[in-house]
Length: 119
Image 1: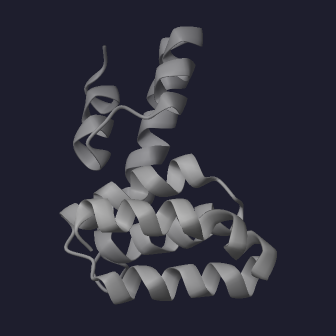
Image 2 (image 1 turned 135 degrees about the vertical axis):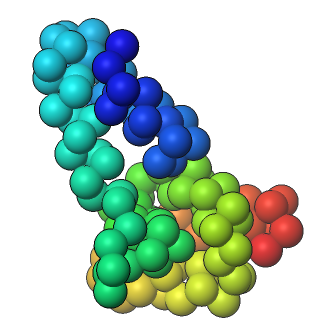
């Protein structure tokens, strides 16, 4: 297994399924996906930090009703010391972007998990 593929686990704490599946198909394709993954999540000077990036993808996951992904991101947000209010702000942005019905659909599971994680 190539170094870049292994490094994706360091970036997020787990090996992304896209990298796993791509590698199963073709090692070079897996490497390309791993490099892309690392580039997206790299911290850059004057760019978004890891907490901000996770808040952004959390809001996107909520707005797309991808609750399973949002719950996983919530765990990462805990590790990056996100506050309860930052998460709630991201949820409100998701509601704004996707509509109140989506908020009604994703919020119960998210709020329950926030309580469980101690937010």
